[in-house]
Length: 224
Length: 224
DNA sequence: CTTTTGTATATTGTATACAGTATACTATCG
DNA sequence: CGATAGTATACTGTATACAATATACAAAAG
Image 1 (cartoon, each protein chain N blue to C red):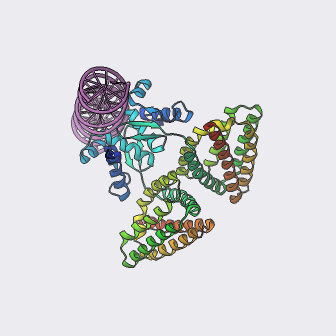
Image 2: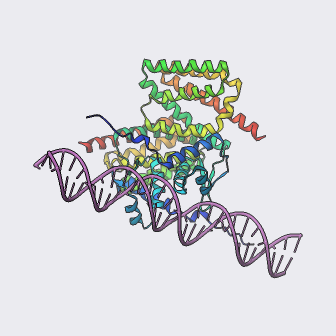
Image 3: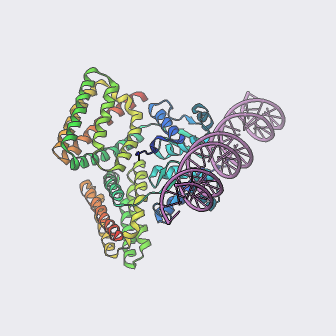
């Protein structure tokens, strides 16, 4: 008998496509803070009916990317300093936990991957290709997540990252900061490689604090 | 002119009522792990149409209380040791963060409330009224949350607590453990009152680890 | 008797319809 | 001219209808 199996992952309900589409639009700023999400309009634009749009909005609501007002509908959640501080405060301890777990589970091949990613990051910094820097930065954190063996933690970090991406675009453009990313990552790699939990946590927290300062600076500058 | 204002909080969409109802049913075990959530059946039982039921399920899905299978529908998420460990691992660092923030913001009147709650807990332990112990235990943690000034953290802790409640019912029944709750809470109160971040974090983490052991014990016993 | 195939039924996925509320605009009154 | 009431429109909330897929059972073939 031939071993055939339908890949259930191939079928994606419209609601999930709509969900991802809207989420992306919010994160990139295509849909701006305060902008209303009108079901019929979105349904027409996406070529679907209201039902999948509504279901997608329910999910965005729980992720905190949209705010509901009864009988008025959804609007894109505002971005502000308080929200950013809250998210980063939480992200700091969760990334720290991820590093702690990474220290426990790390294998030589993981370290090799970390270093490979960081080499690519360094290259991207030299070429000043912002998109590539961002991509490699994400890859680096993902590489850490992948060895935590805590799926829920990974999921939560992904969710937080979505929120941060709404701010971070500006941050990463700030040239002064780019060189430090590679150095910071290097310190984190060394700490994890030597299974030094305390150092790994300290470094990742510092790494996020640096980000926080830059993003907040950008925010404050923009507000002026 | 009379200052009248419609209270928008009074209107609650059916989807939210259904959501809360189903969540409660899952947490209490009314809906058992693996049980299918069939839309028409639930809609009939609740006296509503499928639409609000579906939207409620979308939220439960994102909270991780139900698992979706494409074109087959939702079923109540299983409870198992891995999931519990993951949730507790995360909860530990988030409760710890809550304590840290509480240390920063604590006022004398907050400490008074903590002690009032703990006195009630002690009373409940003496009377061996399990329901009251649980209620006061929740109140204690809520009291800490309320001074963190991080709404997102509070929301996340609530979500995690839902998951833990699915296990904790058994744990709290175990008499041997009851006395220690009051002692542990006392240590946490003292640490927060004296703004000793390190001690507060240590004590809350230990507090959760004790819980973890008891719950895991119960789980393993049941599995046999 | 076992396996396969066909068919009926149940269930989800998606679209549409209807009802009620909010919003914007216009006309009327003071 | 300003304020208020009336009316039309737009939008959400909820229910229902239709389509496609999954499941269960029975009949037929081997």
